[in-house]
Amino acid sequence: MANRTVKEAKNVHGTNPQYLIEKIIRSRIYDSKYWKEQCFALTAELLVDKAMELRFVGGVYGGNIKPTQFLCLTLKMLQIQPEKDIVVEFIKNEEFKYVRALGAFYLRLTGVALDCYKYLEPLYIDNRKLRRQNRAGQFEIVYMDEYIDELLRNDRVCDIILPRIQKRTILEENNEIEPKVSVLDEDLDDELPSEDEKPDEREANRTNENSVSTVRRPRRARSKSKSRSRERDRRPAQNNNGRSRDYYDELEEFERQRNRTRNRDNQHEDRRQPAPRQDRDRERQDRDRERQDRDRKPQNRDRERQDRDRMRERERYGERDRRERDNGSRHDQREREPRNERDRRRH
Image (cartoon, rainbow, N blue to C red; front, top):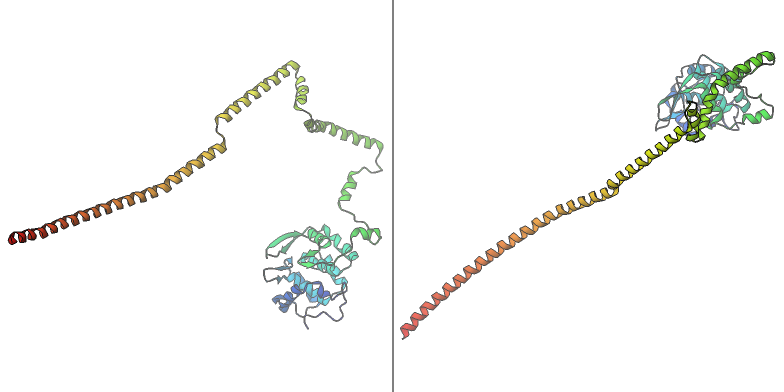
């Protein structure tokens, strides 16, 4: 019951006024603590006190999509649907700037294009600062005239999609609204000469302007001389000093010779110095060789160890063979001695 629109409320843009705010944001507002505690059973009179307590404007913020107090009060106004006079008083309030911002936002949501241009365009004169909370939860500074311009031009303000309105040019063509008059036009009208001035005064003003223009002409001539060649610019400026053309011709030849010698010296230096690519290739080849030498060292060590092990094994096997041979010879001699003795006994 607390979240329903008042029975006496009229449809806005063909729908329930609360539906002007998206369903997701609207459900977040219903679940917020500020809506349940501060916005319960609010009337149009009590809503003014809550609007005076506002300290910033904004839509939703944070990863959980938390609504701001400004957005909660906007939804409450859509639910209550106050009278047009109350909303106009909100906009005309000069003491509390956030009350004016709330009324302007509500009028842009529910008002017709003619009312929006009629009541919001005069607020371009207001240059006061407003604090706005962005989506990340940080505060930004926005001026009132910038905020009103966003309401009239942008499609989304404070994370709410605004209903479309007719362009001002169409209303002017239909003679429904007067053409827009800028404040700067008054300053331009003051500078233009009026019809009441006498012709003598106009001529005096023109002479003063011509005198100022003559003082400023040399600067313009300098800027135009950039397109010309340097040689043409130098000669007339230097001829004023009383020097002949031959002097400047000799100067030009001397500069050409000096530039040629410089170019030759630079070419010789470039030939002496090796190309940077060749140096890089040589450094890379040296590095590769060092790496190959490092890789070969452990391989050579392993080979030397294997050779040593083989030599040791050969020496061991050689000693064994010798021992076995010596033992075999001695055994044969022992066997031979008793046979000889037996033969002697037989004889």
